[in-house]
Amino acid sequence: MTTRVMIVDDHEVVRSGLKALLIDKDIVVVGEAASGNEAVRLARELQPQVVLMDVRMEDGDGLTALAELHKHQPETAVLILSTYDNPTYIARAVSLGAHGYLLKGSSGDDIVAAIRRAAAGDSLWSREDLRRVSGSLPNHEPDVEVALTKRESEVLRQIALGLTNKEIAQALRISYETVKEHVQHVLRKIGVSDRTQAAVWAVRRGLV
Image (cartoon, rainbow, N blue to C red; front, side):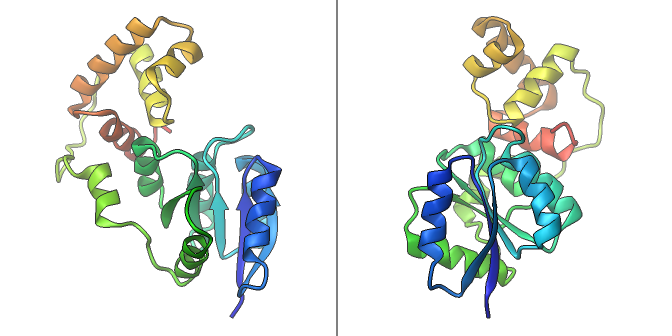
């Protein structure tokens, strides 16, 4: 049985390499996109069974596109394929419904096997992946209002998007030291101990 796959990456050489990898397999590449926004549009038209999605792209990042796909096409399995072994990205991918998170250094056999498993409806998340994301999160998070300032909310959103303190400082045009201070305030106010947990908290509350 043939599996219909769409490849989403802003580098043409990566898309071409993945297409070459899948030649002569029981997989057909029905389309490719260079951005998250394009991926969402094409997925509605092409109805792939599996989407291989990069994270960092212009004109719509992969995790935002994942949220849209999961909302409107929950039957489509999304595998994140990224250069970055970033716990915050992994946290968002888990929270937003991805079937798995692969690194671009993965072997061709591993990528093909992951596509087949995702098409069959299997989750590729290991216990280690899930432990990294939520190992120290409380089992129950009370639904209470947290009084974040406007700037703290902006910083939290940037954390959830996977930006470093330096990148947040550049994005918000504030100093690195100011960002560090805001991050500490945010973690304390929402009751978590690290940035990955903060990302999960933000995703669960629809802030990203």
